[in-house]
Length: 381
Ligand code: SAH
Ligand code: SF4
Image 1 (cartoon, rainbow, N blue to C red):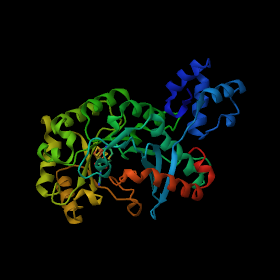
Image 2: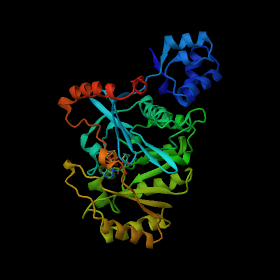
Image 3: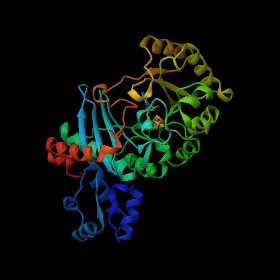
Image 4: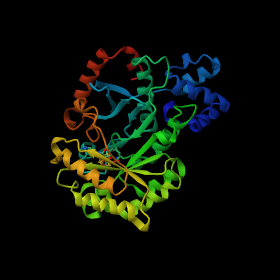
């Protein structure tokens, strides 16, 4: 069977090369060709012996994701939709800022957690992405952007957030090699502090992540009590708030940053009142007698029709932030980006809500996209 080399971290690639009877340093060379140079063709790899290139041609491939469409927002945000087969599509979003370039990456097609305010959750769970499909989003985006922005080969993406579609900690096996590839100096060389896993609170997997591959952690809290959180994040019934915060404190012993980011999606009349803010401040400052070292990130709810929920008015978000700030908690309000192209948090639905017609639409979109995007960028598709 042909192996897709995007599925391997460096260790996995070394094992694959060993099976082909090759030395470990060959794997490093190959890994650099793939991730640092964006190569998809073994013929390009001129410093590899011809015999190795021939073995690779026979046993391996570098198979990127099939691009369906690309939308660029007025604010520079770019959203890509990728076909992952079986009528499923996933999205990745690039968010440029003055001092960084962030890629928001998906981990699953759909999501089984089913949070009330999340468009991906409403769509249900289709399947886990493979490591190659997770890394493939970064591989595509980084090398596309280098050409698109004409950076002379300089790196564009400095930060990755696992905040696209899906619950990354429910796809742990594929996630870990993907994270390792992002961090590897021979891969993307991203700092652990600049790779963030966002989770709705899969407690046992938070512990494992701390052991296996500590990176920055964001926890989607959204409510200060079990009573309310049970309604918004169904996983809370399995892993209630107190257990989640205990896991956060354990994680901090390994984490590259000395705080957890708590995300809190502001829903009009549901979780955005001053008493919720006071309860939240008390919770994170007094949990288990010592609190949790954290920052609060308030996310304006990005509405979608099926949710039946409404974004909190700005004055209420400000009042909420003030209660937290006055209590001494570092609080930020997230700017929404890419609103005009439905690229904001929670709006990523892979455009597959209408499953009956999706296959046809994917076929149509593919034809259109192939006409619009330069041949170069869809070559791997
Ligand atoms: N499954 C993970 C990561 C993907 S969701 C998680 O839940 O953390 C990324 C972030 O977007 C989460 O904080 C999530 O709560 C938030 N989010 C989901 N739907 C949203 C919406 N409609 N508006 C604003 N934020 C939303
Ligand atoms: Fe899944 Fe995260 Fe959406 Fe909840 S918010 S349904 S965990 S993707």
